[in-house]
Length: 341
Image (cartoon, rainbow, N blue to C red; front, side, top):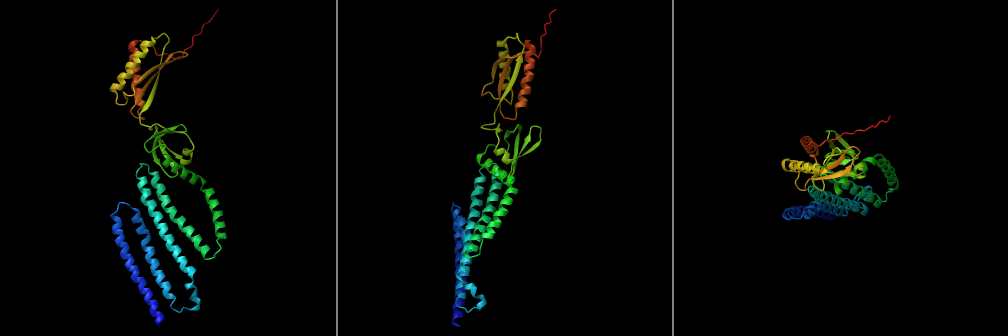
């Protein structure tokens, strides 16, 4: 009879201690909320419930030692099963801590960027770390209980190889997206060129990146392809863009006067246009003697990378008007044929 009283006393003591620890952790939660660091919040959240359950389990396990159990239930008092429960509780603590650490600090890091891709990576890591930790704990428990895990590991290895082969493209695209987030070769809104495809980035996902071409077509490009190709970003290091406008005049034209006129056109365009910068200043260069023309190059700087067509339209119209006024001939390809009798 005294053994039963002792067993009941242990159970009641466990309940009382668990209640006291529960009240303690509630007080610690309030204290942690007042601190700037979030590590203490994560620790309190991770330790609270597992410790309370651990106290109750310990008290019940101790109480059972004072009670005569049927022979068929004697295995309950074996230490390896109690230790198994401790492993499960420790795994619960570690998994909760890791998951909340990634959730808190991963979200904080992802909020520093405008890219939505890193948010999705944090979501994947948050879920993955929980399953990985519990899977390792499961194998550890099986090994501790002397259960042969070799067939399980072999089966898992074969299944893993099959899954890896089936998901090879998916995995490579995912890691390609992760590299884009870390390396930051572009962001949403940038104008880029990939394999001759020019367009504006509209989204960066775990599997692919989407760009909208200048013809308003939506291209979906796998991240693995982007990670292994040359990407031209017209928005970096800043959004201005050098616009080159080739100009040809006929042989016999006054080269000096042609340059003066082109400089006047470039200067007026920079002063009057909302698209063109004054700094860097426009430039005009006499490049070469072509097959049928004298070739010049006018260089202007657009305020943004998406204004080049407007600038070319405005400047070409003014070149046509001024050349007509100045009597400067714009040549066309021609061939002189001399015939002998």
